[in-house]
Structures are given as C-alpha cells and as structure tokens.
Length: 294
Image 1 (cartoon, rainbow, N blue to C red):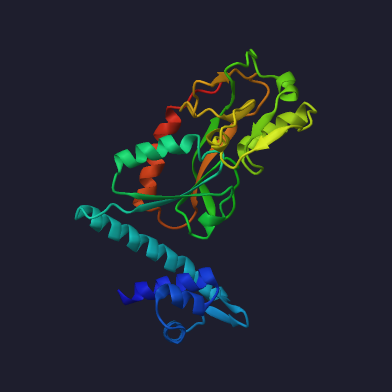
Image 2 (image 1 turned 90 degrees about the vertical axis):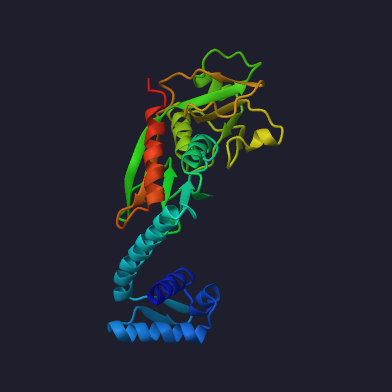
C-alpha cells in the first residue's frame, strides 16, 4: 500500500525533525523522500511541513493532518495484526510504558499472565514517570503512579494501593511508625514516582529529615547486588514482591502513608489497539484481586 509507506515516512520525519534522518529509516534517498512529500502537499493543497534551517516541523494544517494519519496507521496496524492472528502467523505487539516503582512490583505478574493468555503477542516495555511517550505515540499505554492528566490522555483504569514495608528478618520491629522512619535507613524509589511522593509527604508531615537513604531506579535491584534492606517501602500488589528467607513484611501504621494511585493512561483520541484492549481487561482483573484498602 503506497500511501501507508508515505504516512510512515511522514511519521519518521515528525519524530526525527529531519527529512534526511527519516530517509535513513525508510531506506530511500533524501531527495526521493522530499519529492514524495512535495507531491503529496501539492495533491492536498497545503504544506504540511515548515522548512527550517535546522530541519522541518509540522505546519498548523500538518498537525491536523498528522492526527488523522496516526489514527489511520494505528487502525491499519490493528487490522494487519488481526489478519495475521486469523492466519496463525502472529498476534501483534503491545507497547507499554511503566513507572519505575511498578517495574518490579505489579508488572512482572501482570505480564506473565498476559503472555500466558496471549503467547503470540510481543511486548515492549520501557520505564518512564510521565505520559510523554504516550503523547508522542511511542507507546500504547502508560502505567504510572504519578496521576497526571492533560488534554491528550485519559484514564483507562486506576486503583489505590497501600504501601508495604519490608525489613531484614532479624529486625523485630512490631509496627512501622514515625520512630522507625527516624531510626532506620530507608530504601526509596526515585523522585517522580507516586510511591516516593507518599513517603516524602509522610516525612514532611511528621517533620522528619531524610537522612540515610538508598535510592534505586528498580526497587529490588539492590538485592541482586547483595545489599539487604533496612527499611524498604514498596506497593502491596498482592504478589509477594521478592520476599525471601532474609526478609519479612513489617506492619505499617495505616495513618502514616496515604495510598498510592496506580493509573493506566491511554491517548484521549484514536483507536486503542486490540493488544492494548486485552491488557486493559487483564489489568482490571488484577486490580479486582488486589488487597482491599483498610
């Protein structure tokens, strides 16, 4: 389909900001790609790109066209995946962005169930704390703990989850309260995650300075290098979260931390791929099975 190749080339130009760079991805010469764009602009009667000294960018009509172009590409990709699935060739792909405090808590179990239910679907997962990849159409869904809304996204699902504390099995602290926040070394997720925001809020509320702390992009990556937690906070997603013989769950004073909201975002406009719809349905079941908030 010749028009699909042209649409894909326009997408590459938008993402790279350069006809020359886009031509490398499309494996054609820059002059041939430029001629194709000029011919398309002449056909529809408007310039979709503004030519700048440093590259190109979408014009106002180009931005309007690009929305419909992306929606068409998404629908055609979904149709191609459906045909391939019917023929038994493959079952499509799912692109998912997750925040770092979910990457090693809820995500492994959800992905395992998803792949078991849909073994032919290829999953691509990236870590980010915001919706930029979703707005740039580089991902299908964004699973985040930092609730944020903008004009380009909407909420597909959300679930409030409590924080859980993990300590060394030799640590016999009965309940995690304000005193334990002061006395222990904390293992924290990165700034920008909902888990970190809940912890920081509790520290500020109780006027506790953040002293000794270990910060990890992945909550359990420190364990892989041999480090054992002193006081390690994570989301209670009902999965066990990597507990072993050296660690145990410590009860937390329920008034200490506010719940963290896990939110699944999708783009406000355009069709959701079938692979993404299946992930939404499976995640809803996962949310339904989570522990009830106290």
